[in-house]
Image (tube, rainbow, N blue to C red):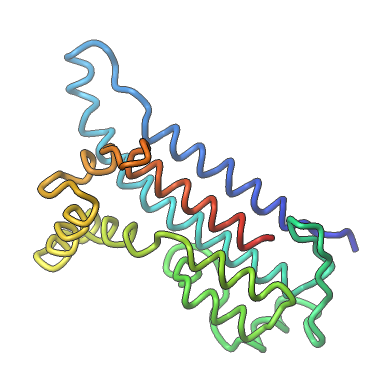
Amino acid sequence: MATRKLGSLYSRFLVRTEQLSDAFFAPLPQDPKEAAQCQFVHAAGNVQIINRLLVLWGEYCRNLVIQSAYGNVLTLQGNRLSTIPGINGFSDLRAKLGVDISAGPGTKWDEPTWAVQRARQLAPANFTQINLGVGFAPIDQLRVLRNYLVHPNEHTKGRYQNLAIQLGYPGRQPNELLKSNLQMGQTVFESWIADFQIAAYNAAL
């Protein structure tokens, strides 16, 4: 069996999140009339970009935990992980965890505590790295924004308003907030992308 590399997972996540960033900051047409027509489409597209970031993170966490459990895999530091006894295929993983470990919308792999708990059950040799890395992701802030965009109501609005205050931009609408600068010179969205990438890197060391 060919040796797997967690570096391949990380590189794929890096490329796909950079593509999201490029799409988010794609400029409007220079012509004012065309720009006005495209404004709504851009705003709607940004909602999908936020959703996509959650999906990509969930897929990364799932694949990281599962490949680590299968063993015969190299971490980013070059450490080779051994196979966990009794884990010879996907059915063994599913039986050991006792939960749905499929991927995609509706699954829980994007939730750090859930992903870490699955890793704890399987106990791969790199569990400590997975735990430390995954826990760094800014998932709570992203989810507050996503929930307000997808399910606007008084509860999600209140949580979003608190997030805007926390980030130093009270009263700003979501698209404005995401493009607002933080102290380190990055926009809020750029900062989130960078934090997810750092989390992914640290989890794969």
